[in-house]
Image 1 (cartoon, helix red, strand yellow):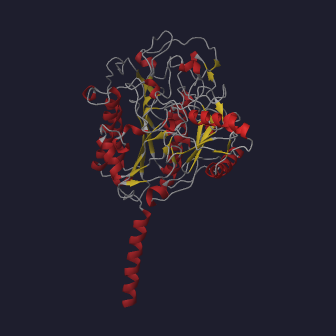
Image 2 (cartoon, rainbow, N blue to C red):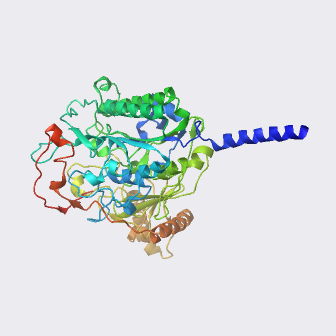
Image 3 (cartoon, rainbow, N blue to C red):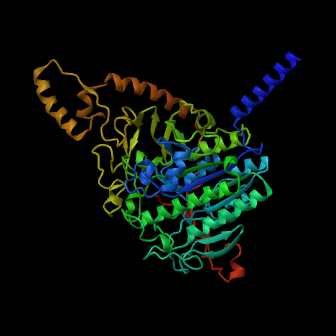
Length: 561
C-alpha cells in the first residue's frame, strides 16, 4: 500500500510539473491571438520606452504585466511591405512586396497600384483556419485593394476597415475617396460617410474600430472558439486624427491626442478580455509597422527616441519599433527581453502557439519566439534592413553594418521633404545612394544607438616624413567629417582596427549565407493604372456610390524614395 501511495503522489507531482511547464491555456485549447499593429508609431512614443509626457498608462501597464522588446524591428521602413511580412513571415523581397523599377526604392499600395498580395503566398489566417480559428481584421489592410487581393480572399472571415491609407479628401472626378468595408461590401467612404476633419483632426474612427473589436471578442467568447484578431488601426498616420473627447488632451499636440486614444482603446480591450474570462487564454502583441514619419513634422508624427531618422529609411529610427507581449499566467510580468525580434516572427510564433508547423515549401524568415516569451531565452539571429530590392544593412548582436546609405534624394530634400530633420550625420545620412560594400559603415548600437560614430579604422603612419606631412591633415579632415571609409584619401590613410576587422568577418559570413539562398519573389509593386482605383467597390450599387473609371493606361510606378 505504501508503494502505491508513493506512486500516486509521484504521478500527481509529475502531472503538476507538466501542466506548469507546458503553460497551455486554461481551456486546454490553442490560445486566442491578438496582434495590435499601429501605423507610423515610433519607438519613443510610449511612456515605458521613455516618452517624457507619460501619456500611455494602459500600454505601460501592459508592459508591466508582460514582456517588453527594446530590440524589435519592422521588416521594412514602409507600411505595405511590413504588413505583408507580418502575415507571411517572409521578407518583402521574397513575398513580392517591393519594386524593381529603380534601385532601393520604397514602394507600397496606393490605390493606383495594380498589384497586391500574391495568391502564392500563405497568410497567417489561412494557416490558423486549420486549427479552427475565426479570423478578423479591423482597420487598414494595405496589401492591395482589387477584389482578389482583399482580406476575405486570404483567410480572414471578417473585416471592418479600409484597403488603403486614409489620404484625402479627393475630388471623385479624378480620384475616389477610399472605401470602408464591412466584410465584402463597401459601407461608405472616408471623408464622406466616415468623417475625418483634416483641419481639426476630429474623427471617431478609432472608436468605431474599438467597438468592432469588442463585438468580435464577445461573440467568440460566447461560442468558445479560438480567434485571431488583427487590430490594424491607423490614427497615428498623417493626417492624424482623434475623437472629440480626446482632442486637446496631450502635451504633444494632435499626434499625442491620437496616441492617448489608442492607449485608452488598448486598455479597454485588455479589460474586456479579463471580463470575458479569456485573458489567460489570449496572447496579445503590440507593435508598429515602421518608425515615426518624422518628415511629416512634429504636429503629424511621433518620436523615434534616441534613434536616427525615421520612416522610409533603414536607419534605426525607420525600423526599430515599440513592442510588448502580454499573456497573463504564461509570460512573466515585468520582463525585458533583449532578443532581436522582427515583425515576421509574429507569423511563426503564432503558428507555434496554435500547434501548427510552418509551411515546408518555402523559406520562412520569421523565428518562433515562444522560447523567448515563455522561458526568457535568447536566440542568436541577424536583422536584415531592406529598402526595396536592396539589402542596405544588417545587424548581428550589437553591431550594425551599413552596406548602402541613403536618406532621400537631393531633389526631394530640396522640396522640403526631410527624412532626418535635425539629425544630419555627415557621410551617413547621405542624399545620394552611397555604396559601402567593400568597407561597410559599422556602428555599435549599444554604445551609439543614434548611429553617429562609425567604428573608426586606425591610422598607420607612413615612414616617409613628406608623405606623412601630406596625409596627417587629410586624416584630421576625415575625422572631422567622420568619413573614415571608402577608397578616397580618407580610406587610404586608415587600416582596419581589431574590433572592425573581427565584426566585419562575422557579419560578412552572415550576409554571404543570406544572399546565397535568396530567391526574390515576383515584384508586385511595379505597375500603376488609374483605372484600377476604388471607383466601384463591391456594394457601391446599393449605396449609389459607384463612380466611372477612366480608360486603362498602365505605367511603371515612380517611387522617388
